[in-house]
Length: 278
Image 1 (cartoon, rainbow, N blue to C red):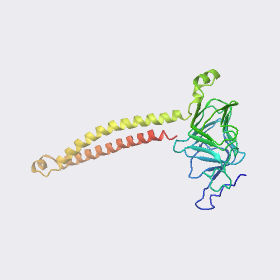
Image 2 (image 1 turned 135 degrees about the vertical axis):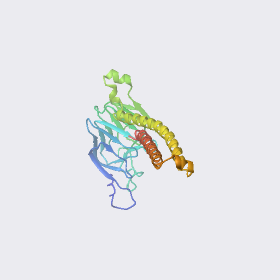
Image 3 (image 1 turned 45 degrees about the horizontal axis):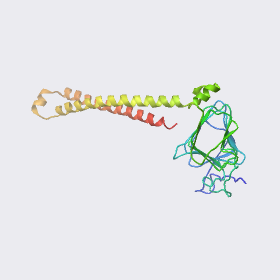
Image 4 (image 1 turned 180 degrees about the vertical axis):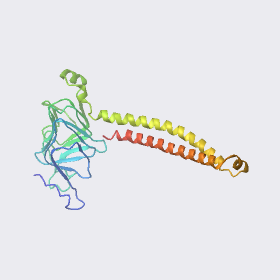
């Protein structure tokens, strides 16, 4: 029997849930607590939904995930995306019954959902695991366990899945034979990600070159300024206060330029690392 998830306000220290149903937002971010799926959830037709690494979705009985657009469930080895039963005590410690196969319906990839990608995801305690009406999707290092009728079914054909990380992908030949544009099999966020990554690399490289030049100029301007600071009588006689002011300004300008170029390096580096996060 399905258990009602605990209220976020009840039992401080216990697990809390965010309740979701219907169309999913463009990004379903991971939280410290699971999502409770109270009714069927959908990736709408023509839309792309990204589920962030570490997100956990606990499904109520007789509910499932329908993928009509493109789903990008992007877990990692250390922080997988988990699709499981509301009774899974690993995530709902207040469940009064144990999770079991057939607890929820599963993930259904519709015919239009070309380009869907699930990486480092876990699908467990469902009826059908993943069932797809298209072969043009990709599974990368996904785990299936305790599903009732099937783990993976593609176009009516059940695939043999073990308890090891599972990979599935249609080939380019499959796409060409079926008349499906190869671009649809690619991650739709790849162009944006590559632009950020390569722009960040270019900015970091240019910033490093400019920083090297500015560091050399700063070193020279600092030496010149130091020489004008000498209290030697000959130095005081040969150089005016205007020359000292000019040397100080040159040193400060070179320092500001060096800091600016290092800032460009930092922003480019952040861009590179951030491009791997979505």
